[in-house]
Amino acid sequence: MNIELYTPELKEEWDAVVDASRNGTFLHKRDYMDYHADRFTDMSMIARDTKGRPVAILPAHRTDDGILCSHRGLSYGGWLMTKNADMPAMMELWDAFTDTMRNAGCRELLYKPSPHIYHTAPAEEDLYALFRHGASLQSTLISSVVDMTDPLPFDMAARQSVRKAEKSGVTVAESDDFEAFWHMLTALLAERYGSRPVHTLAEIRLLRERFPQNIRLYMAMHEGEPVAGVVMYNSRTVSHSQYTATTAKGRELRSLPLLYSFIMENCNTRWFDFGTSNEDGGRLLNEGLIRQKCGFGGRGIAYNTYKIIL
Image 1: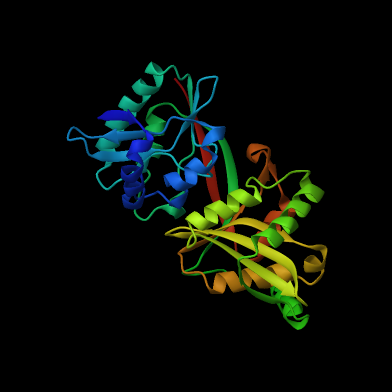
Image 2: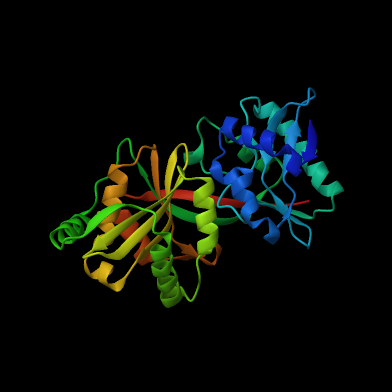
């Protein structure tokens, strides 16, 4: 097994492997990863068999202090495996991979595998390889997910909120008004958490332009005024709520349950992911937020990060 560092000349091949992989999504395409390339020192890798064919690819970057990360700019990733990446091949890959990291002067690996809901076929060979190479669990984030083939119903409080919003004249629809939503989101994050969105308005517009079928905005309106919004990231198997925001008026009108009800009714993926409810790398649980998501039928899926000392 040969481990090759990614270069921009390999972009077309890289994206083709993402499409053919069992556990990759549009977040791993270079047009998504490279929008923030200036923030990271890329050290993505391609594993090839003896005939030079790609077996798996790893979105990754290296820190100044010698840590290889897969990938702090993405919610999940790890080795994206083709159909040829069976367990024996992955064991050979990991042996070559750890040698490559040590030869490059890396002292530690932080690895974020794709949760199983993003798999189009079984793809957890990397988890066994992590165990065999002495990985420890670094952090766990808990996300609230609905199986859309057998969804749990909204609880009574959520159903009452949907009826209240409908009676109050709240309407919901898909929208392109990212500016109005970003104004709402920025104000909410500043007020509640003293933070800002991970993406700027210019960045989310760029990504939306590059991935119009994957990145969608839905808005709740009342008397012509936006009162709630959700930005969805849609992959092959998961519809993921990337950003959610409401105004004070939207909260008063209970507009968010109606908005989520609309999005879920139009969902065409196996899984609906409301996102994580943690702070401080998973050490803190936002109980109010996760109770709301449980009320929408969400149940727990772990987003794990593993560490290997090289």
